[in-house]
Length: 164
Image (cartoon, rainbow, N blue to C red; front, side, top):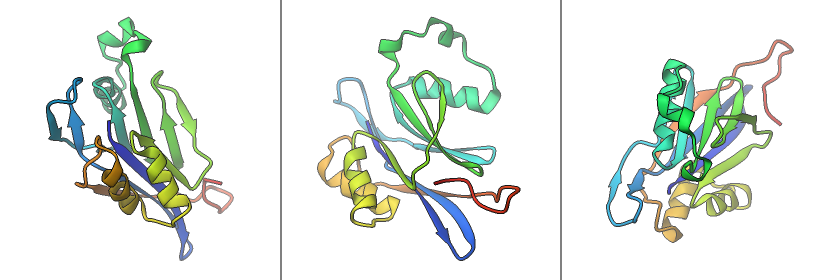
């Protein structure tokens, strides 16, 4: 699969979300592997993806607002993906039913190396990119070609930032 890690940082009177992801993708049998982007900036959000080809339908939907025709034939057993959205209004998780769920934690990870990445960020204080590198050391579905994106959180009308 892959490893994606995200963290919210509150510092210097501002607030930002840092998202990091490796670039490894493989075929269904795990024989063929190649590098591909896992972080996609669409409008003011960054979408970090993990999973199978269904994530392409998700990204197309977020870009255009149109659900592709194949989504009508959705077979849940075929759908295996997760998405982290870093947005100006906070950190969000999109599941395989295209449902957006607010993340009220400062750290979150998805993919085959998510447990390593979460431990690295929460317990060892690692930056998301370092957490993905740590996952790459033990997870054969994660490589050490890591990309990072940053989204600045927008202050709410009451003067604070979204999040926990």
